[in-house]
Length: 425
Image 1 (cartoon, helix red, strand yellow):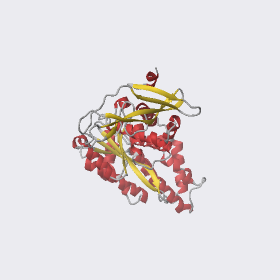
Image 2 (cartoon, helix red, strand yellow; image 1 turned 120 degrees about the horizontal axis):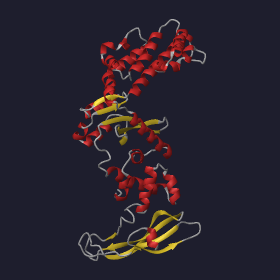
Image 3 (cartoon, one colour; image 1 turned 30 degrees about the horizontal axis):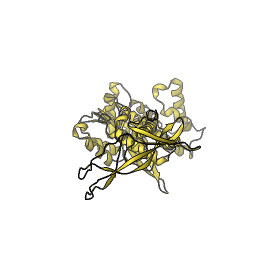
Image 4 (cartoon, one colour; image 1 turned 180 degrees about the vertical axis):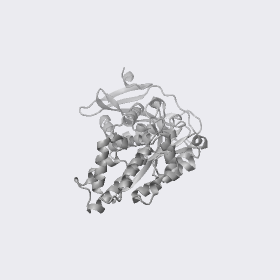
């Protein structure tokens, strides 16, 4: 009955140490062990001794428990054999080099990886230290992520985006990581160090040319390094500029122009009674969302805040064009796609509008491509949100070895049905 409750095959329960205020210690040994053959000479080994190895196990009736496994230590009877002695292993009880039973290791991997619990919380529940849980999660999690050939698959649309990994040093130097996401399936495929093009290039090289040629769309947020990666490693893919970031850039330039005119006109930053400060929300609102009263209010505040009209026309034109960037109508697609119709570069426009025009001119093909693909970098941003949740739970990461495993277990959506079958690394 004790062996049945323990749930381990071919194990005999020797005894249980139950001390008040301490965890239960269950002493076990393998019921029937065949004499293994020596790996050097092939002779049948003999028992040298049996040492107790203390392993962290799952709680028993709400109490922390440990498993004292009486391991067999074998030796070769041939004194001239170079093998000498070795310790017997049984992966059904515990994996080599881990201080936790196999069933407890798979349980903590799911608790920390799938449900996003903290390592410290699980360690307190099992009555062990932080490193025991973390080493186990890394060992089982690496096998779960890497040994599943169907986890990455063959995506048709891939997105890249950066997220902050950590800050170090006296001046809080920022270290970044790059998320590689299947935006169709909305799954994080992998995360690499840095936000340049070197590591993403290596990742795509590891996938192979056939895999890269199967990608049809590549989404990005107006990033030059990521654009170079896609053009180099995914030559068959069509680049798509994320419409949210295009509109955000337009609104940012619009706000910069408003603040510059505010300082030139009144000599100070915006205050609550200043006309240009009062219209800051109306400027960035889509024109179709403004009724007649809202549009009249906007034009009135612009006239009051910029009496000379130096930037009024450019502000209104830029606000309207921000809407056109995401329009679905074919005539607006053609208008944005033709260079001679891009009038942002007109010298009568404010410098912020001219800067926006140059950016749109460089990215016009990628901006127009969204109207045919309708894939965005939204799933990549969603993956970054899940990554930040793990960082908050973890209170920050300092070691990049632990970082991608924890992130992929939570945001990478691995096949948790494979957890009972994997072998930890």
